[in-house]
Image 1 (tube, rainbow, N blue to C red):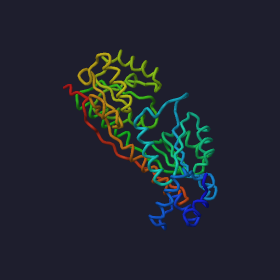
Image 2: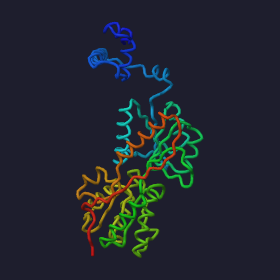
Image 3: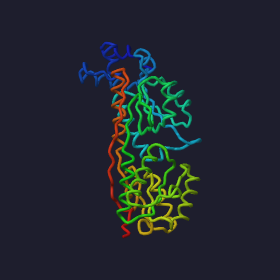
Image 4: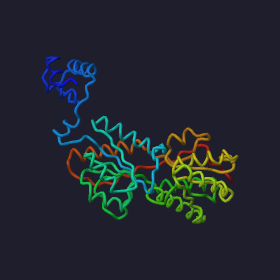
Amino acid sequence: MITIKEMADMLGLSTTTVSNVIHGKTKEVSEATVERVRRVLQEYDYVPNISARNLASNQSKIIGVAILNSRKGYVNYLKDAFISELLGSIERELKERGYYLMMCFSSDTRELIQRVSAWNADGLILFGIMAEDYQAIQKQFQKPQVYIDSYLGEIRLNGVNIGLDDRRGGYMAGRYLIEHGHSRIGFLADNLKGGDYERYCGFREAMSEAGLPVLDTDFIEVEPDEQSLAMCYEMVYRRRHEFTAFFCASDYYALCLMNFLMDRGVNVPEEISIMGFDDNIYSRMARPAITTIHQDATQKGVLAVQRLMEMLERREAASDQVVLPVELVERGTVRQIN
């Protein structure tokens, strides 16, 4: 492979100039020179030695993105369009700043930290972390950290958390269904932790405010793997006459439930109403389109990277809790019944 010195000799430039173009430091280099260097880079398929560059700068230019799976075994989180949109925005923002994204999905906090440490990541973005996991991470990873949708209870955050007013979103969904005449509403989620728990609490608050009961059996826990998910929806199908509506903790589950019921001849919203949460591409492309609670996944990713870059540049820890707003999006899956 051609070397920087050979390119510099070929172009009649200094090795510093060629190196600056390769590494994106073009402020002091003319556009014509940048274009000449880039043509040679393309011609020779030049690949920069990232390891050598990182060793010289004491930076890896790698940002770890970690999602802690609350369940044992493998869960494909990328099936959820909210996660995909979030990760896409993080990757785009990091790329624009010259950083690389490395992802880790694990149900084991220790394994997660071992992987990130092995990458020598400059910083870490973590999604859905609970209090017990946070303490373990703090002991083992000392570099800048930004959290997304993490719920730490009374623990003081040593970092930044980009969160959402989940409880308000759950309340808004509950009120909307109640205002449309629904009093027997099932809540469907894969756990009652973190954001899903906050959404459930908001939903219960709306029901209580209206003088409506919420039974323990109204919470329907679904398993995220496909086989278990189908079994859960089969149970919902058998119990459908107990409810007039379902509030699902994500659009992904709302769409899966709607398709399952409609495949069995149950019309939505004529026979059962369904409401989701996220306002991602699933809810917009479904037919009927899903009434849902909007959150901006792209904004979460952008803010997470921005705050992490600020911490890296200052070389000091920051502590902040960002709470993004929610919004009701009315579409076609909720029927007025009174």
